[in-house]
Amino acid sequence: MRLVLAEDHALLREGLTRILTAHGFTIHTAVDNADDLAVALRDPDAEAAVLDVRLPPSLTDEGLQAAIAVRAARPGFPVMVLSQYVEHLYARELLASGEGAVGYLLKDRVSDVADFVDGVRRVAAGGTVLDPEVVAALMARRPEEPLGRLSPREAEVLGLMAEGRSNAGIADALVVTEKAVAKHINSIFTKLDLPVDSDDHRRVRAVLTYLRV
Amino acid sequence: MTAPSTPRSTGGRLRITGYAAAQVLLAVPLLVVFVFFWVGGATAIIVVGMVILAPSLSALRWMAERHRSMAAQVLGEPMPAGYRPLPEGDPFRRVLLQLGDPMTWREVAWVVYAVSFGFALSLLGLLLLAIPVLGVLWYFGIEPIMVARSTVDRFFLTRGHTERLAERVQVLTESRADAVDDSAAELRRLERDLHDGTQARLVALSMNLGLAEDLLASDPEAARQMVAEARTSTTAALGDLRTVVRGIHPPVLADRGLVGAVEALAIDLSIPVELKLDLPGRPSAPVESALYFAISECLANVVKHSGAANAWVRLGHDRGTLQVVVGDDGHGGADQTGGTGMRGVARRLAAFDGTMRVSSPRGGPTIVTLEVPCDLSSPKTTRSSAKDSPGS
Image 1 (cartoon, rainbow over the protein chains, first blue to last red):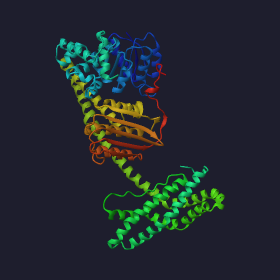
Image 2 (image 1 turned 120 degrees about the vertical axis):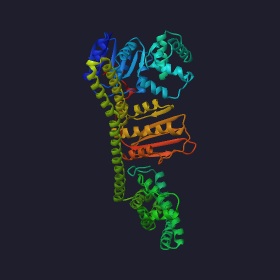
Image 3 (image 1 turned 90 degrees about the vertical axis):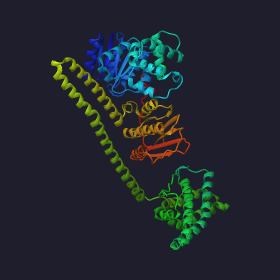
Image 4 (image 1 turned 90 degrees about the horizontal axis):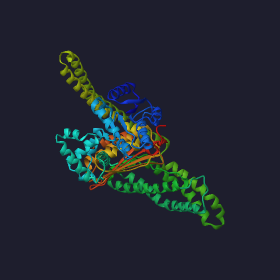
């Protein structure tokens, strides 16, 4: 898979390149500013992008804007956005288009290489991977309809789904069997009135509901 | 309000003639109050003097206020009285405070003018209209006459340049001292956060790495363990740093400005917050930061203390003042002077001549109004104007 990589710190760019190539990705282009990123994203050869939120020239949220823009031009283009800090607001904006294939993680998470690479793969496959900090903030909110219908356990499962975990991963985290997880997930789909569709697609819809996009 | 430069219509001329009539009529009560004031003052040692003085001071103020608003209409510009604040309660103390207010003595001096030359001017204006032959003279003469009368009124009834400056110096001295205190406290807090959090974790990290280095050859498994622990410490240290950075200047505020940052605050709150944010530009960075932390504090209080199910934030800019209203439907009873957080907010805003008002009757709702005079710069570049092509 050919990736566009945008990160303005040379050391981090090198590190990310090394990690991603070591795990079978190809770096299509690695850029350090928003203008070059825009050019790189227009190349039809690029299949996915890993972006830093803050990029020169203005060092505000160019990476995020570029991610939103590329997904407007190429719906469902997989984007993994990395940042020194995460904002629930930004997660919503990224997912507002309604397709999955979005990742939004703190840069620190890269240090857990296996998890990070797995996250990039999930995003490339159309999944949604949100940072646990975003999910934790969501859990703290008073649930509104239709989320209020979920049992606490189901809410927990949905949170882990938003973090991009597989059924096996969720089962591990909650110390239950995979079968139990599948049961919870089916119940979540029913309670959130998600139309019958492929499992992957329903998972994305459930996460979008969770974020109230 | 009509600016003095634009010519008045006949209706406008009639209106200011009406003021002249009112001024003529008020001259007699003014004279009475003036006499009572001095009689009361002279006999103030015995209680009866105070009994006379208190109402005559109130009457004097009331009449001076009427003249101020008339003069403001004639001259086409506001005429703030600028009284010193009077506390409720103890009438004796109020009289003393009023006597200590330079504005009272300005008003007393003004009475002498208002019942002599001022009275004559107003009467002249009135007579010009009353005598039909002089109609033309009235049409052209009433305005200069009333402007002359009102200009002298303004001279007596508003504070002089020096007084205003003196008061300004007083206010600035206080708010500067507060700002210096606040920033010193802020630096101490930062130092503590960095020392107890980040620094301590980095020390642990370097110790772990040192140990791992030692063990690498003899016990690779233990070394691996150490490296894993070191990674955990890094994550924690980064988390601490993020918290510290958010406390100094939240990244989302730098990215998106006040509107975006308030949206981000609202989304993270555990109760629904209705937003109506309308800013055509961005205030200066220090004002933006002060307002952000003020709103953040208000919303934190809503969640912690109000028991509210809903909150709302309104933000707007009008005539050089940025106004923020934070409200909730909780049980009210919040006290502006109670919490250190709210006091800090008021002090921080005061550094920009900003104000905070809290209205929180028992049973709610609580409404906090923040106002800061400021200009906005550069049109907004928020999501609404987000780029529609990749990059650019």
